[in-house]
Structures are given as structure tokens and as C-alpha cells.
Image 1 (spheres, rainbow, N blue to C red):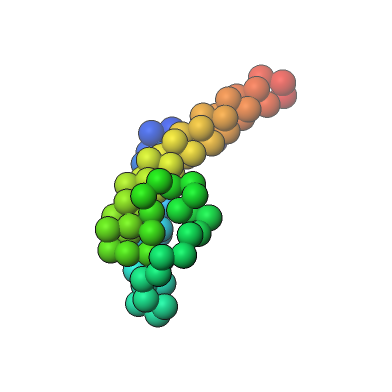
Image 2 (tube, rainbow, N blue to C red):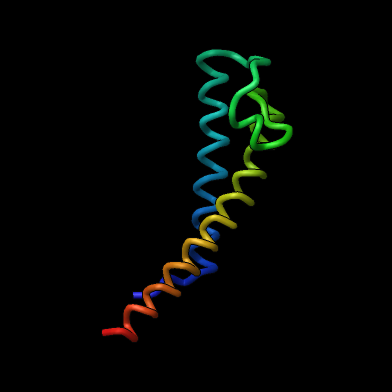
Length: 87
């Protein structure tokens, strides 16, 4: 079985971006927006637990998830193809 690399990458980007967006809104709803630095704020420049930060996280998550899914699917297809040749 092989992955469709572009479709997998788009799916990963959407899931990661929307997940980060919803998680940010969830934290804001229960804990309010805060100025505390988080690990995500260290990784994603401009991210914070604010409405603007949620949109920044959405964009970063789309890009990060897309690139991660692209690399994962490509590597999977590469190694799955190697195994098929060896058998």
C-alpha cells in the first residue's frame, strides 16, 4: 500500500492546524487568555493564548502539519517500495 503524498500532507496540515486552533480557543474559554510563555510559543513565532494567537497557530499548524505529513508519507512510500523489491 502506498500513500498519496499530497493528500496525506494536506490532511495532516488541516488536522494539526485546526487542532491547534480549537485547543487555543478551548484553553482561552476555560482559563482565559494569558501572557505566560508556552512551549508552543517558543516553537511557533507569534503564538499566544489570544484570538490573534489562535489564528497565528492555525497558520503555523497548517504549514507544520503539511510539511510533516509530506515527509512522513514520502518516507513511508520510499521504504515500502524498498521492502517490496526485497521480497
